[in-house]
Length: 164
Image 1 (cartoon, rainbow, N blue to C red):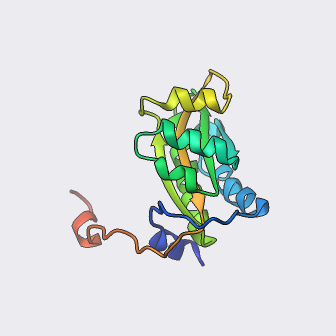
Image 2: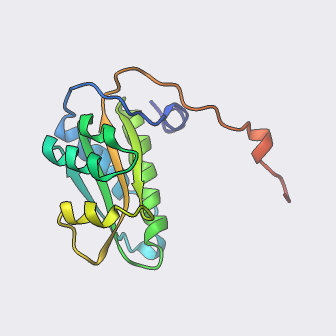
């Protein structure tokens, strides 16, 4: 699937088959995160892959809207050094991960972000250094069923030429 098709096909998936994702596919997805644009070439990100069922259950329990993480094949936590543009860089990496997963037929859901009150608990669980911030927790797995993306506003309603 090409990039535009992957972007258009991507949807938040919260129900996963009980099927592992091959390590090489997880690495390919994380590598796409690594290739995201980064302000001042700082590349503040680190990616923590979690496949252990107990840890997935613990992460799901910590979140407020991510209980389904316990059923995912894995999670990729995007953590960034606290630099001036860590949030922008981490979000760009997160989006690349989401699109790469869609392109490979793997479902994903962006669960947690920088402003959630439980981020510190997840960082402690993952043994991340204190100088890092949690930007996102992304669940990954093979979808139970294909889900169409949510309907978005039409381009004509959001695209402006020359001025707003």
